[in-house]
Image 1 (cartoon, rainbow, N blue to C red):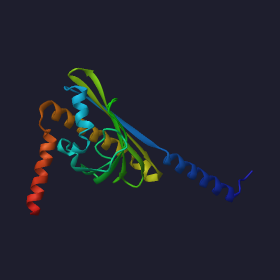
Image 2 (cartoon, one colour; image 1 turned 60 degrees about the horizontal axis):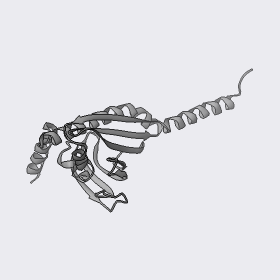
Image 3 (cartoon, helix red, strand yellow; image 1 turned 90 degrees about the vertical axis):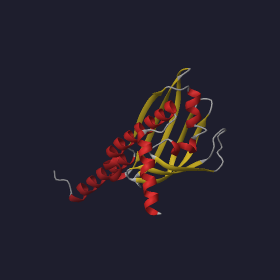
Image 4 (cartoon, helix red, strand yellow; image 1 turned 135 degrees about the vertical axis):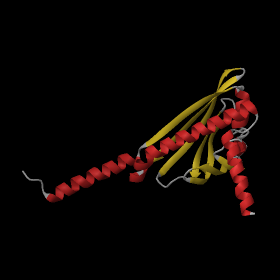
Length: 200
């Protein structure tokens, strides 16, 4: 029995619609961690109260400003606006969605600066005490994407975000353990100084 042409078209359209719907729901997570030779309280001081000062030690952030009063006790701001040194990005804005001083955890979502196919981007930072002089910084980034481009670029984004988290963790470790910025951050500062002098 032959299937009418119209029904065949409707079937194909239905499959495409279903496929698009499935793609729209897809996302990914990246989790990375590092052990740092400082106490959990010292690490939290940089991550929590020092939330806006991330540009002072992270080679991925050139500048940051905090704005607004946060509903979370102890948080220094409600939103953070960053000039970033990450391929494909320049400026992003972030909003705190969780800040827990006692548990030494915070989360922020990215409000702007991501590609249009990214529907949700959030980073969760937590500190785990190992002993009096060692602690662990754990980062879990979660993303949701939509449509054909989201599905196409998901793998590339995951690789890039993995590299970004690893860089941030290494920068944090060097800064806390030595009191100096990492080699990557020092190089970035030099690049920015050259740009400013050239523009002057």
